Amino acid sequence: MIGVYDSGYGGLGVLAHLRAALPDHDFVYLGDNGRAPYGGRDVGTVLDFAEQAVERLIEEGCEIVVVACHTVSCVGLRHLQRRYAPVDGRFRVLGVTIPGAELAVRHTRGHVGVLATARTVASGTWEAEIHKLDPSVRVSQVAAPLLAAIVEEGWEDSPVARDAVARYVARLPGGVDTVVLGCTHYPLLLPAIRQAMPDGVLVVDPAPFVADRLVDWARRHPGRLEAGSGALRVLCTGDAAAFVLHGARFLGAPIPEVIPIAEHQGRLAHRGASASPAGQVVR
Ligand code: DGL
Image 1 (cartoon, rainbow, N blue to C red):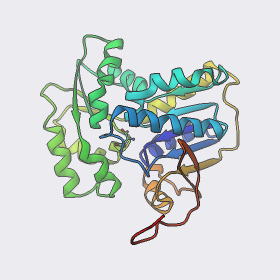
Image 2 (image 1 turned 120 degrees about the vertical axis):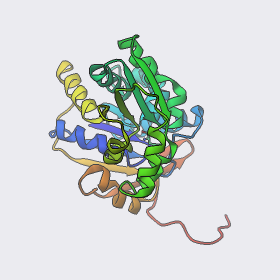
Image 3 (image 1 turned 180 degrees about the horizontal axis):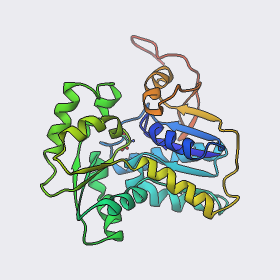
């Protein structure tokens, strides 16, 4: 079973590519939409949330977890790999930044732009990973904190989206030839981003390449991923009905039944599906 974890809906876009690439495998998706967005949070909180999510996916029986969230991948992948590698010596946590960096280096003529959340930009991980592959590549990052919220509202094809995208793209310095979408939500803004970009600038989405890399990993590690029937189980921490509604735009397909979970004593446990009551609550 393959676990896919994101701060909310965005990783469903990565999941879509993973399922297309590995149709005979079963997936569990954990969307932490009750605590999203992660992009403006402090490092300690992101790590706490990520540990809870990975532990839950281990409990679900996953042999591997793909951290689809760029913010977590940039801030906490090493931490998660060290902390959970000893589970049985076989469990793996993979991220999206290294494949994204490989993709950028493959395409660039020397100057990569990265659009991402504020926490991702502050981590400096894109620059570090790109420079491991080619230290001569210049990397210019722009934090675009409004874009994920615009996409979550479903406003990707609106004047608000086009204006916000144009303002962030204008912050990229001249000479950028390849721009990486360093946040799970931005592929839904591709038309607006392409429109705002100067001619000749290539825009790349790491998600399909993340799927290629996982297929390659599975080929190099035969027997590590158990084949299944293509089943999908979805867990979310927030509003399950909203997850079904909005998630379909990211997955490009209807979302099956969503299992509500919530933090309880440091764990992501099952919770009832009851809606939060309106008005005051006294415990
Ligand atoms: N999954 C997050 C990311 O890719 C979306 C944005 C957020 O949670 O702030 O960084």
